[in-house]
Picture 1 (cartoon, rainbow, N blue to C red):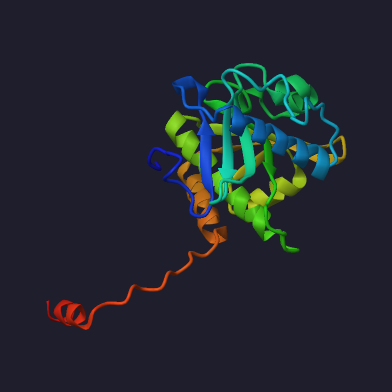
Picture 2 (picture 1 turned 90 degrees about the vertical axis):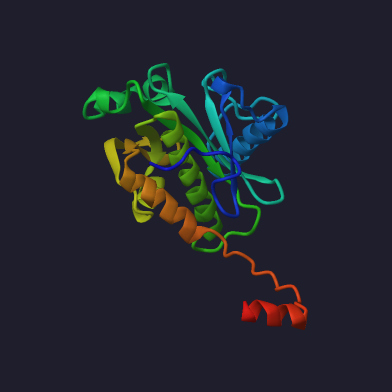
Amino acid sequence: TPPPFTQQERGTDVRILVNRPTDGEGFGDGLLDAMFRLRARYFNGMRGWNLPLESGCEIDRFDGTGTLYAAALEDDGTMVGCFRLLPTDRPHLLDSCFPDLMAAASGRSLMHGPGLWEISRLAVIPTEPDSPFRTETVRITAALLDGLFAICAQDGIRRVTCVTDIQFERLLQVLGFDCHRTAGPVRIGVEDCVAGYLDTHAENHAAARRAAARWARPAVALPAAPQHPAASARSAVG
């Protein structure tokens, strides 16, 4: 099992910050506002959804007390991605907004119950132009997924459920995750969507770490400080 996660320990060039209301850790109003605005830009501006906005922020009835948020920040502090987690033993997106997908799931217990949390509102907006292969988007997404599995390890979450589009399902498979589709695809708005889950077992933890390491930006090598000849001689002898 991976060690407990803190915001300074995970990732390489992307920091993952967690808003965990249950133990008093929070983003603060500024970061929460930035996250809701990023969601509006991503889902309505980039994906072509038509979600209600409040003063430029995308906020729905599932945002509030008990919701866990994570955000990806670049080294300069710019937010480039986010997601939220909702416990499935209370109303959440799948059972409240997509009851047909929930009903079609092969066994409701697969998608609902203690230790099962739903991931939703995963959004990524790179600060740098993306390549045709979307390397910047994949880099940030991989860092967020690595953070997701670290949160699951710390909080005892054994399964993550979701409603997602088939392109993201395919990305999970390419990144090496053992993911399971339970219903769909069905047309929702402008996209073909499926319901499914990821178990938080060791193989998926390892896939998350591999993906984050593979897609991270290479570390910048700093030039070595000049060394006095006498010091060099001493270190070579000793």
